[in-house]
Length: 237
View 1 (cartoon, rainbow, N blue to C red):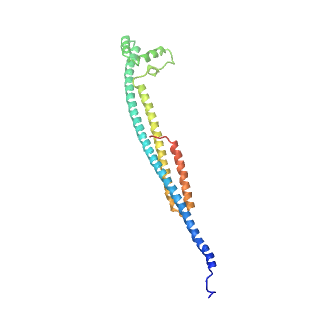
View 2: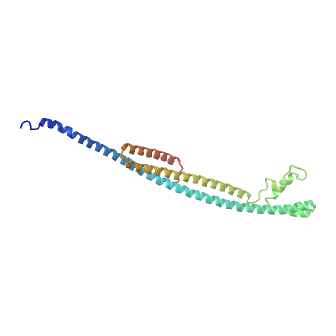
């Protein structure tokens, strides 16, 4: 009978060794759960921040697109204004040319009354140029301008306005192109943040914490790059 009784001391020594694997597994499971929970918290924070930045980038892209449309519209308006002023200048030049032609013909025919009649009807913007042209002695000076219309002092009404309107149109057009580039930059930034959202959501699909952290690290790098671009880009608020 004594041989069949268990050795209680031996059993007491064996029980901790039997329990140790289960306790270690439980500790490892708790550590894995903590790591998984940390990964999830980091991923959620990254996704939340990126979602806000994505919405902001989309807003900025929309605003710059609107500014581009406004600038193109203003450029078109100024082109129309320039064409209208240029038409006015051409009409004034045509009148001056006809009256000057009468004066030339009368002068060539030595018809002084007709020449004086034509000269009295020179327009206010043509008369100064005509006087400047005569001062160059065109009949004797081969280097003189060919007509008063070549003089710098000849400025028909509408010519300056047309030039200024064309310059404003060019400026508005350049602004529109710049606004378009800015809108495209924000659109590309939205795509970059979309990649961050993709990798952030993908990080929880791996059983290995190491792989999850690697994916999160890559997403974090993209996020930092996107934030740097967002700070550098001009904004409309």
